[in-house]
Length: 340
Image (tube, rainbow, N blue to C red; front, side, top):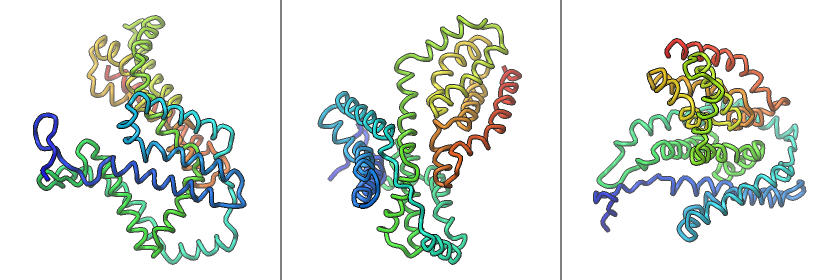
């Protein structure tokens, strides 16, 4: 069978690892967690916990099929309603796990096993970023004829998927456990994180929503109303502090970037003061990252580690990062003023 043709008439590249494989794999893990919750008799809210993860898995498993059968508009509305339902379940506290601590015997057994395996336990964790970077760098050359290992249009996602699969195989090799044990362990990790797992996906789409609603133009109009465009210090502080503040609200610097770049950086710093776009936009992203260190909305950075480490203070990570973030934000503001 010949390869399908691309839109420009050339031969399309068929990828072995693409979003069409990655997303269903995520859905399968979430379905496993849902089933494990429903089978977990004797624990509170097991029906609602299982329902939460089953609903969360639905877009990963059937998103493409829903789009093909129902169209984009109806699919987006259904997924939006699903997100609201997930928020309602989480907001009522029905998705929380039982929170039961392991027994002393289980803890002792786990520590004994860890002492035997030693530092080899860190190899699967370290393998994920290392293999992801390697996959991104060499991915374009992993191609034979019209077949490619990683999808060119989703190279990073494909490399991350391959890295995670290799890390799982490495973990099985080191520990001697079965795939079933890996899935069973994933339930504890996923439930310990809980609803914040949904937050990065929602926040990632928020930048697109703001861009479609022309929020950047609204920010530009407000800035012209409140500030003098020729006041370089005021414009620089509006941009850097605004990037940090928007990121704190949205939990994602990439969501804040198009708003502040279109509303402040482009019209006032680049066009108005003739600044070089490269350092202006780069420093703006760094200011956004400072905001990431200061907000619980960045759940994958600040709330998930606290849950995994069983910290008593869920905001302990933010409190530890705050002095560094504020110092870097101030230094970047000064640096951008000098560059402009």
